[in-house]
Length: 247
Image (cartoon, rainbow, N blue to C red; front, top):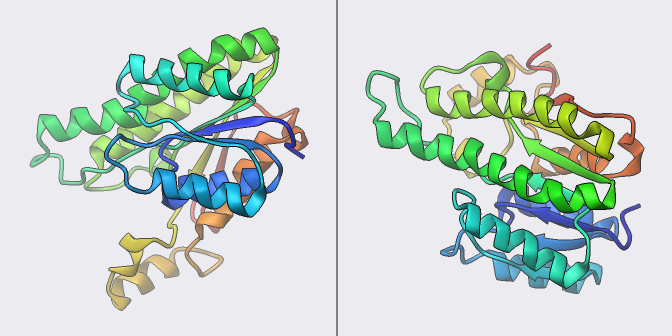
């Protein structure tokens, strides 16, 4: 389905980003793993994917807050594989806290990585995609960007902004053959959810119609759909992957 194509996934050393990289590799795509320079996981993830799926892999570390690092990511991917057909803006962080206690540094860091980082990436990758007259950009939003969440003003603002950026990108580049969509995960099983008490887990689960937390593979499957020609008439959309939490 993606054989011979190239996918770049930011923040893909582990977690959701790694699951996406594995899923797209399983469909035949060459994979560019991107993570921060201090990440110990990126190289191991690339080796694992190459060994298991037999696709081309490349690791390019860098900080999405830096326009120069992002351009280096794009240039490196093009030099190795010739095209960038899929770009997933997955890099993101949280710095949670009630608004009255939130520091300006915590606000700035989350917005810079989650939102400005995506802006840098979209701006840089759109140029080669326009030359190709094709491409799929997928932004990792969140259901909290749709519904809000106490204690996450910075994270919510970044994800709500990313949804708006997705729609504007889709409108600006549709005539160039570039699609842009967002995936909005709900409660996904992770190290963070594993640390929650049984009582808190029950409270969360009671609000989810499907009565379970999502998995990283649930997210990767939707990204695979948006990356492929199966979604060739889909752009500017936000797909909630949340077990029905937000309807």
